Image 1: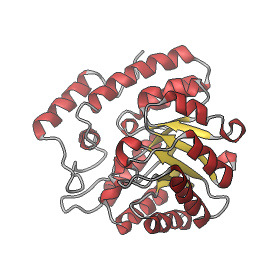
Image 2: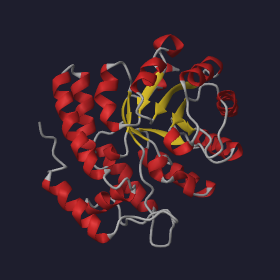
Image 3: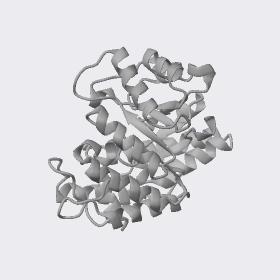
Length: 303
């Protein structure tokens, strides 16, 4: 089971759209090829960066199928299957198994506040809906979903669900992430959502990061991972410092469309359309973003 854990940089890819609000399959394939070519080891479609809750189950299945097919075993694909209902979550999770995904990530239920035990029961039901050897990562992002995953919840789920191998935790609580690493005799996989914690988490025994920014600057994340693998922590720290600077530029508006703006500028996808009612940044800001990123030589890993 543990060989199925994620490690290093996992990219929650955007969902490219055409002018008619339909999934742009060709742009999605192009994005997959681009990231695999840059050395990204795992793709994570239908995550927050993919605007997941804005899409129908049918559209999410199309995205998952496209990414799995285009990856063709060259990178792992973990599909984010958490949805607004348990039924949709189970349907999407089973679909991920059917299409040959390597595993799934499952965000907590959203909007309605739930007790710890209710969240545990949710993950237990999802766990039982897929094969016992199919890996699952919990996904905690309380700043968006309302519901949090504390150490009790993570531990109880790990104790009762052998196929839940780890968690992606997207709230900047390093103490909690360190505590979660102790679960299941120190074999529970922990990945951070906050990009600035990538290097620190890995030094502390974590397994990596799930980074939306990495689809724009994948070279930097690959370089951080390589430096850590080689034991050059000072080099990793310096690359992380520059990466954080670039991320601050990308995230200044806290708008997913900034990734699409840059990916279109780079010739990877065709449009910057967001799934309605989400809206993108205006043309003036998009130009400013591109200019600032170019002036900072965002494609180059500089020490």
